[in-house]
Structure formats: structure tokens, C-alpha cells
Length: 152
Image 1: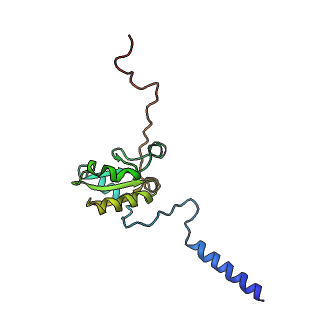
Image 2: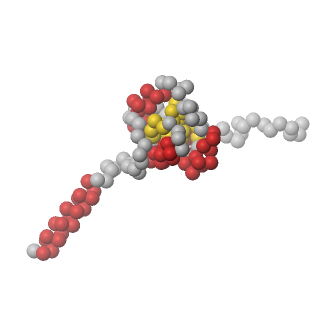
Image 3: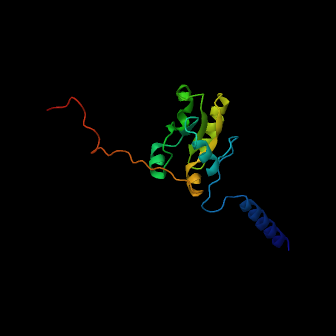
């Protein structure tokens, strides 16, 4: 009887722990204070491109593989503090990562440095909500412009 009670308690504890886990295929972004923007919220901000700045904190290979937004400033998450002077303070900032985890941390950092941050967005989340991402392939070495001053 004691073993049956112990097994029942372990099963209940396991079921309770799993109920808080994200469903298969979903990613749970780490906690941050930044607002995670939905597609409609970001689309509304993008309607005034002269007032908003997207800062994509992903690696270049993530942007080219997954896709991104047509116009953005690319600063990887580990480099943001080194480039604060390159970020305009007169723009509303939205940070971008794949699922808004890194973007949320970048948004927190920027807000702590006095920037006006609207929130964070996940590019893959945006796309899953019906938004369109842009894929830009880096030029191959064969199509790159020839160097100047070479032999004739």
C-alpha cells in the first residue's frame, strides 16, 4: 500500500511539472521585463518607419537562414554595450531575436541605458502569426565585385 501511495505521488508530481512545460514545437522565452510584441503591434510600429528602429541581436547566419525584417540594425547580443553610441536615442526601439528571448534581454539592457524601447519580438514567432520575413542571401565569392588595382 505504501508503494502505491508513493508511486501515485510521484506520478502526480511529474504531471504537475509537465503541465508548465511548453508544448512540443513551442519555445518558452526566458523571463525579461520587456514587452513581447505580437505581430499586429509590430506591424503598427513598422507603419511609421521614421520613428522606429529594429535592432536584430541574432547572428548573421540566423538572419540569412530564418529571415528577418527589410531594414534593421544588426548588433549581436554580446556586442550591444560596445555600440551604444551607434544607436539613435530619438527612435523607438524594437529588439529582434528568434523567439524574443535574447531580444528581451537586449531590450532590458537598452532601457536601463536610457533608450526608449517598445519591446522585443521573435522573428519566428512573428512569422508563425502570419507575418512575412525577408530572406537575404549573402553574395557568393564568385559574384563579389573584383578588387581595384589588380594586375591588368
